[in-house]
Amino acid sequence: MLTELRLTNFKAFGETQRIPIKPLTLIFGANSSGKSSIIHSLLLANHAQASGNFDVHRPQLAGGTVDLGGFRTYVHSHELANMVTQYFEAEINRELLSAKMVGATDEEKTEFLKFCHYGLALSWGSPAGVLHQIEFSLNRRPVLRFRHKAGDRFSATVLSEFGTLLAGEINRMLKDQADDVIDLSLFLQSLDAVVGEDDFLLEGMVLIDPRPEFVRRWPSGMGQIEEQVQGGLQAFFTDWDWDNSEELPYWAEAQTLRFNLSSLIRHCSGEVAELLKGLRYLGPIRRTPDRYFMDAPPLGGTGAADMSAWAKVLADESLRGNVNSLLEKFELPYSMKPNHLSDDDKRERGVFPEFEDSAAQKKFSHLDIGFGISQMLPVLVEAVANENMLIAVEQPESQLHPAHQAQIGDVFIASALGQRKNTFLLETHSEHLILRILRRIRETTEGTATGLPPVRPEDVSVLYVQPGPSGAEVVELPVTPDGDFDRPWPGGFFAERFQELP
View 1 (cartoon, rainbow, N blue to C red):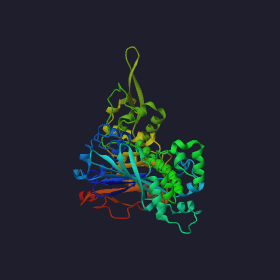
View 2 (view 1 turned 30 degrees about the vertical axis):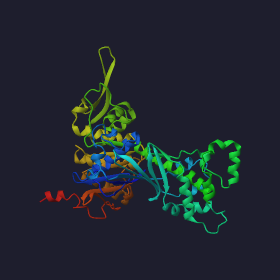
View 3 (view 1 turned 120 degrees about the vertical axis):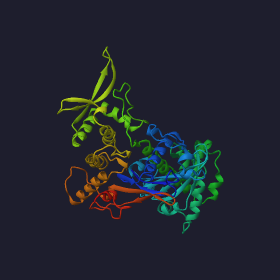
View 4 (view 1 turned 60 degrees about the vertical axis):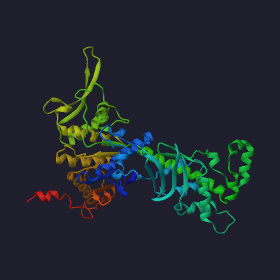
């Protein structure tokens, strides 16, 4: 799960802003404050991880509804000398990481599996949005830096924080050394030399150590290495700088640590790539298909979620049943079903959604039941069709009655905190939406049954974006167990309401 995003020099954001991500993340602020910039940065990253191009104009996932204008336009204040930086932080999946550390001993795995979070910071700039640097962090402390050399190749440097974080692993590896005192700085020098011997390759956003495993992982003791060479692996070492093994006292141990690091980095950068690949996005105005789907909208993939939602719900009977159940909870009198069009020769030419009002015994097109339902349906589909996904929605309350704005809060709660475990980024102006979530937190604290999963303060991130002297600023508003905020809302909590009351 993504736990934090940071942005530097992107659109409205100048100085680095921290955006904590929880299963339910709500982003508030005035118009043009920079709220949408947070979600647009994810659209850019989604496009870049698939194409390798950070000079993004129209992010593929937005289906043509967002135009970033390329690096020259989206870099903060159009200052081409600036570097745009985007930092992703996520929880380490220890079970998956352990499985991918092939060849590592249990003792080695234990040291690496103690970390809770990893971070990946990507920095790019002129010309034309070239990716210049990637920085890898453990528990929010940078440990490795990769600098672009040419093409898809990056050189690696070990940072000083690395020794502090992995002191236990380093001491374990060196416990059989003759020296009474381990020279940590000398070990880091050895590790830096070993890590820097080869360029890492970037595939999408995945950092890959190109050295084969049997070359990367050395047993301690040069005698065993010589036996392997004599055993038929000589061809693999013809270009090896053997002087390093003599000059660096911890050379063999550094090789082993590089092997484990490579597994960790590949796993973590791959997790970020998968997270971005699976991003779902709904813009502030959800497009609706034509009255008759002569060509069915795409079922998913790279297309925008607003159009594919209609095709999904028509094709999947179970999904359609879930959506119809939600429409019933919203006290809407409609039940959706597909209607197939055929020509005179009874050949199917298309399909369109039909909404049946059982009480009135009438059927309607999706274009004839009000604009609000057409805006709400893709949101409902994304909430009940996905699992373990990051779902970004701009103005989920668009065109909805206040009661329905509150009700859709329950839909997000069920999808995020129930079995589906989705993560929502909601850019919104809706007072009713946040009040419903605060109410559910209070009811959870009081033990009141709601039929929904429990909602606790640690499940919710409420952010307020406002202008600052160096660009947009993100203010975090922590929530208390009684469903209130533990700091004043900037400008008052929806103070406009009180200005309109007598």
